[in-house]
Image 1 (spheres, rainbow, N blue to C red):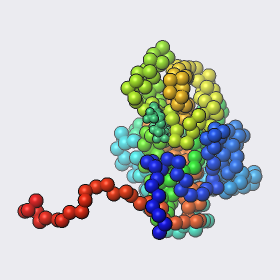
Image 2: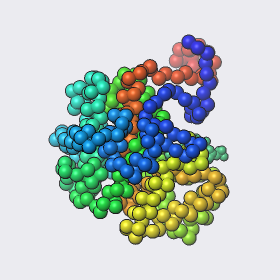
Image 3: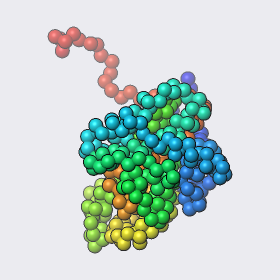
Image 4: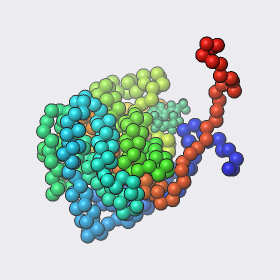
Length: 376
Ligand code: COA
């Protein structure tokens, strides 16, 4: 083996492998999926087209998209067994925990679990893409003591998710804002959850295990869980008149303010302007201006005091709130989208695999002898 390389804490700045899926360019505040700017994809494509792009390298033509969408729609139903299991979930369980359990169950139901051929994995991906929103909606309805709503296979993915959660499809402006958020959340190179899925895949474990690991990593407030914390924070601030002082106090107390900062972007997250535009549209649509007013003051204060910029979770949190979602649904919605990036990375890892197994620098006790229990 070659010489030891001491990596910085948190692997900051370390390149661990190649990828063809996305490129983050912090120097020009840009993110591309398979060569396309994420802003262009968000404005011009449906989330289904982006999901196809992620796993098929190119954007689909109409025929390819129709076939892809039809397969996704056909997979939206959950089995009766899974629906029965969801009825047993504690009503106050966090939706990320219920989702992790549902994905694990879906894996157990798949007889092809050890078949990791590219064709089977693509099919498993489509099944997860379709079933994850159904599982989120089913667990949400159960937690509220409401009847399960079956998927509507005439609707787009975003429309169907609203239908399964709330029993109706909202105005096109709301659906578009939601769809845009899914596109923006779909992929972001070797972030913590994606890296987790690649580590699990590198052991030649199965796709469902990798996705369960990804969900666990995404749940953390330093990663995907931040979109929930942003909304809790906006509610805690409560009033634009106190927002500046709230931020100054938080900074004086050296608090980590949720929705700000990024390991890769130092001068702003390329996804934020697009999401912010659609959060503003949500504020216009609902007439709920307060959240954006508070958010804008927090942002200005953070940038002027510390030079730290908001990340995508900052505008996404209030957008989802204004769409009517409970705060603890925000990170599961992130999973609905990031499943595309995760599965693309899982398949890329499988295609050119070497087990990911770093070393550690032992700094514990020196060598010592074991004394029998009566001599200790
Ligand atoms: N609030 C306050 N200060 C922050 C901050 C935040 N959200 N994010 C970074 N900083 C400060 C750090 O305290 C540090 O200051 P110091 O040099 O005086 O110690 C400096 O900025 C550099 O941050 P660092 O901790 O090195 O960043 P990181 O790359 O290790 O962590 C995050 C990146 C995203 C985990 C971090 O910015 C964070 O915790 N953000 C809040 C959670 C969040 O929004 N996560 C979603 C990410 S998409």
